[in-house]
Image (tube, rainbow, N blue to C red; front, side):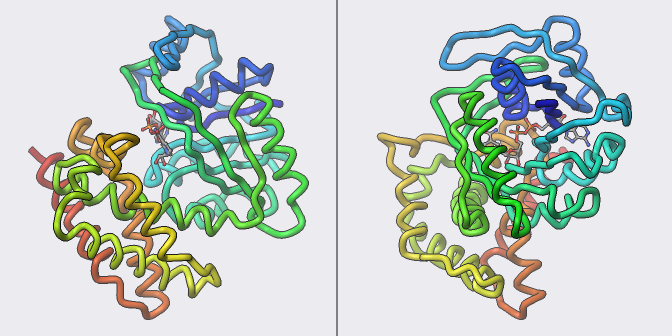
Length: 312
Ligand code: NAD
């Protein structure tokens, strides 16, 4: 399959590597100059569980993509707030034969992708794979992961199943689900609680979970997500989701992990995806006439923190 990874950072590079190893014709597309030049010069380094692979992999800037590069599949892997810009710059390779798969964290990315591709070619999912960048040209990850995905509109489940099979052939452990919007909201509840709190409090998940107010805050935020989801005919099991969020506190499993938003803002001084997590709930709440005060406030506080960290 001819596959482009649009946004070949931490996770995109890892996916590109695995898909190429399985025999696909993979092209990485990225706008970060040091990263692109390092891959072109020295190959892509991929460290998986302490073993490092070095591979040659075609890598383009968005400005270099041309219509003759026709892709069967584009997997988008920018951060949420970068997605629109990326798609706008690679329009030349999006044809009516091109499937687009979005595994970004957060809610509502289909609204952006629909501006550039027909709904029947859009596939949404989420992933439990993780990765981080060591530096330009080098991605690192530990452990295994999985992917759930579904077609955006009815009548295209067979294409979604085919896509899942191709990804699984590359060891990405993908499965088709008939309820992806539920899974996306469920994962967004984890991000919508742990990401913002760990970032603002500068603490890992175990430490946040041990605070007196954690249960109240998590419960309130999950209930705000559920009230919004209900307006979209998605009935979240809030008790199960709160338990799921609170299971992240366990220091014997992932409790000592700092979520990606903390890594983005506090460690790497980059803008966060808050507008596509709690911010998305605030916008939808406003549209549906539902009050979402905790999501509103958390979004505003993260923007304040961005101002403090990024403008100094
Ligand atoms: P990342 O920042 O490492 O990678 C994004 C890449 O996109 C960067 O290399 C950047 O240069 C490139 N890019 C962004 N905008 C661009 C543009 N307009 N033109 C060209 N290149 C552009 O991000 P990541 O950690 O790989 O995460 C990607 C997405 O996957 C996010 O939504 C994240 O929440 C989600 N996710 C990440 C992980 C993880 O472990 N890293 C796990 C699950 C989900």
